[in-house]
Length: 176
Image 1 (cartoon, one colour):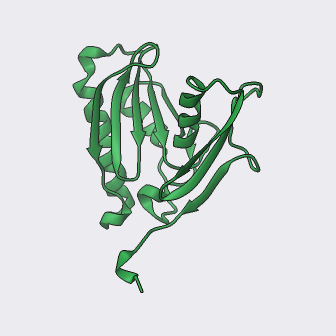
Image 2 (cartoon, helix red, strand yellow):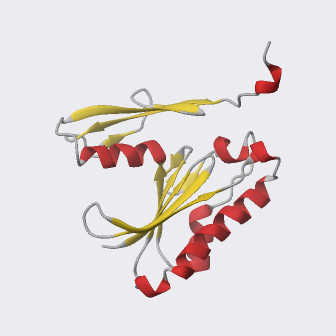
């Protein structure tokens, strides 16, 4: 099934249309602001959601109303829809809006979200033949997920098998 796909990162939003198999089309990459730019959380979310809905509007001729939205997100996700924290975007903000509900209301489409490292594990599961492997990312934080073809979930992100060690802001103005 075709889908509208977004990869939200700490500095960029990647947008595309997913086709059958592994192919994507209409790829776009846009710089997004974060707390590091001094923006407040409401402004960050407004810009990010605005960029996503703008992409969907531009792609309307390539989409059917049933095409869902799939989001790869740089933070922990609970129950497949609830963002628990967004440290890369918001810093230590306590208020994280319901991105899935917001996009569903704005677009009328089904919305699915998963952690970005989980998304990477699913991708690698299609090109790696091993039955079990770890995906580890090192960027503003250290994240990991285990993939196991024989486990009912496939991507295991439960403690103690995987997780995130946290995110840290690097302030180069304070170098010794």
